[in-house]
Image 1 (tube, rainbow, N blue to C red):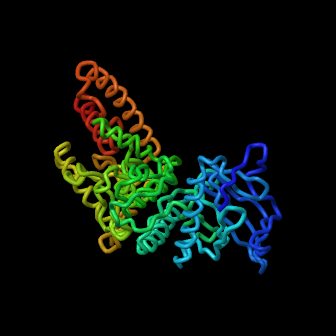
Image 2 (image 1 turned 135 degrees about the horizontal axis):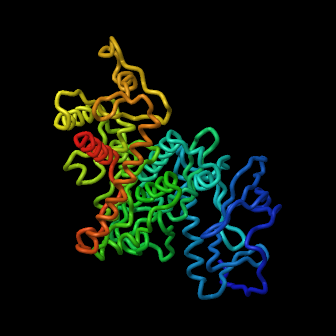
Length: 458
């Protein structure tokens, strides 16, 4: 390529104009779609009047346009510019090898205007970042899980070619109205990830919040677990509305013996399956060795019949976050019911106690199972249980009962905050990093104990 540079006085708009023709008129530019980073993307038509997407190599940090030509801003940027263009061409060649319904297909790559272009399939859909920001209601529980599985399956295909994508984020996943997901933008992809001592190119593509810490370094081992970190960060954003804490900051916190600023999804009341949330948390571990290592492992964990422990502590105690009681399968619900019954036996001997189960906020109680309940399927039995409090007394007005529990919880929370403030003054180290959100079962048991104490006093 030419080594000519251009002054600011010679530059025009960064994008190609509408009506520009490429490759001897084979492609007609209709519209600029998106730009930034290392490329410009256009909607175009080919010589057969089919809509296609044209991606132009345009590293805006160190290039500009003079007329139709793209040139380095100065001689100092020439080497970097040449490197990016060559990497762009390599990307097109890599993509041309991939034939998968979840990966955008490349038709052609060519050089023109002192840069390079690739022609790709036009996918009539929106990227997940745009959907999350403009139509979040579309990303239902089922849609998100299906999108995650489709992303993982496409990524498994890529990894089978010894390629890492390295740039997975919500804006690089397109979703059509029919729910078809497509993985795009392989500009940062790298082949030969198994060569642990290889040096990466000087031009790195990282996205704060989505890239694992190893993507920020030129010479460090990168594995499929690195891509899976980005997948997990992407779906963390889609679930919560924002990207997780930047991996560099998380690494610095851990290196300083401080708490990881990341808050596990599985400890929050998100509308997604428990095992899916746990998998996202594990894949977002800072140390590579602690992450999920492959797509196959991720799918196996997510499809596990049992609820996965949230952490090593949960694994040792067998504890499940109590807000997940709302989604437990009937068999596990029965196990928790038995545990609560044992507890209540000591609180009120001789009285049969039943556990709370998932209660929608409506004012009616579920009907009693009645005769033949034993023969019903487990899911129907769970639905037919009559709502009772922790002493087994029927709850006639669910809304009133919930308001009472909220009031008791707020009162106990205020007292707890006061005690914690006093403890903090006396023992700062003891209370550092203490979890302030008590699980649902603990709060209910606290209210139960106070109710019994008042009963004994009267």
